[in-house]
Amino acid sequence: MRRASTSAGVFARLRRDRRGVSAVEFALLAPVLVAMYFGLAEFCQGFMAQKRAGQSAAVVADLITQRQAITGAQMDDLFNVGVQIMKPFPSATLKLRASAVTRGNDDVNRIVWSRGKGLPALTGTMTLPAGVVERGQTIVVTETTYDYDSPVDYLMPSITKFSHKFYMRPREVETIAYTP
Image (cartoon, rainbow, N blue to C red; front, top):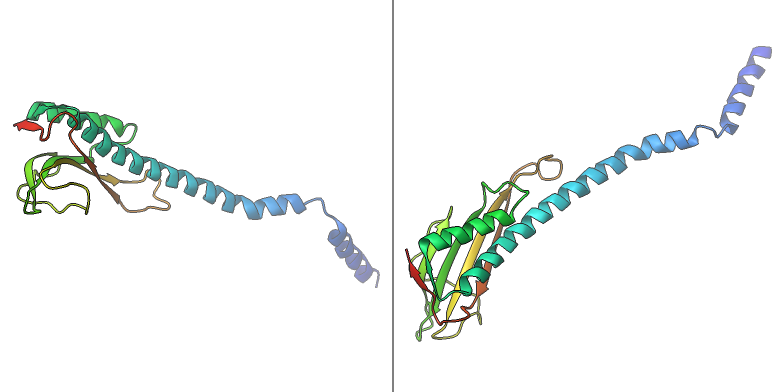
């Protein structure tokens, strides 16, 4: 009979003891908080890569539209500026293209010239969003695509493709002359 009262006293004492509650709560919450931290860090890295790819398109368009004429070698130099913007992310999967598009009086958007780095140059016509260019005007369209592969692969286990288009009018001339 003494044995039953002793074990009942041990259980009662354990039930009242609160010394290990914090350790148990930490053990339950720590894995969740660590997973959230790494997930947020991975999301932020992907978001930064996406923003830099878009900024590459914007900067290349801005630099092209400040000119009256451009050569193929100068265009390659401007594409390299876009590549530098991607740092510290790897730039091997960054692809760029710049095209000058003129809207004719027949409302057809014809490609005047196009050059790409990783993307093929375009010929023929291009569909543009409504209101971007008026009849007789030219617009420079820059495009980027970037394949982002997360270094940790928790939330984004496969490659994520980011793509951007940027539209800008020439500043000094109606149409920027291009020499290959």
